[in-house]
Image 1 (cartoon, rainbow, N blue to C red):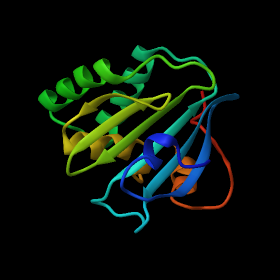
Image 2 (tube, helix red, strand yellow):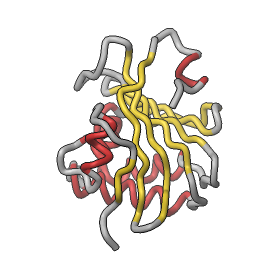
Image 3 (cartoon, one colour):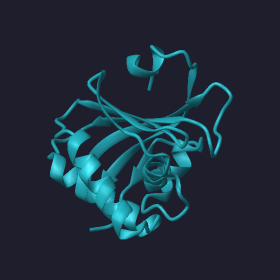
Image 4 (cartoon, rainbow, N blue to C red):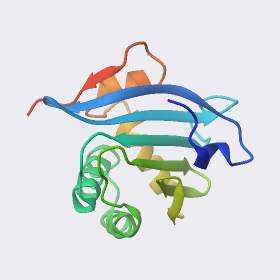
Length: 163
C-alpha cells in the first residue's frame, strides 16, 4: 500500500508500518494500512489508518461496529461514548467496493477523516483518537492477526472472528 495523497500532501513524512487484509468468515471486508511519521510508531504520535474497502457497507453499520469495539476495549464513560457515537455519525460515510477511508489519529488533536482523498470531518478529541486506534492496535482487539500485521509482522491475510 502506498502513501495516499491525503497523507503525502502534509508537512509530515509518513511511512507504512504494516498492512493486512481483514476477513469476516469467508468474506474479504477491507485492506488496512497503518502509517506513522518517519520517526516511527509512538504511543503519543500521529498515525494514519487507511482502509480500502472490498465490500459495500452502510454508514450505520460502520459506526455501530466501531463503537461496539471502542466500548468493549476502552470502556469510556456514557457521556464520552454518546459524544463519540454522535460525532462518528456525522463523519463516517457509507462505503462501496474500492472506496478509501483514511483516518489520521493524533492523541494531541483528535481524528481527521478523509474519504476518497477529500477531508470530510474532524473529531477534535484526543481521547477519541486513541480509542479509535485501539480497535485495531490494542492487545485486546478482536483481530490480533490484523494487529500483528499492522505493527510489522510478516504475512498479509488476517481472518476475522468466527461467525
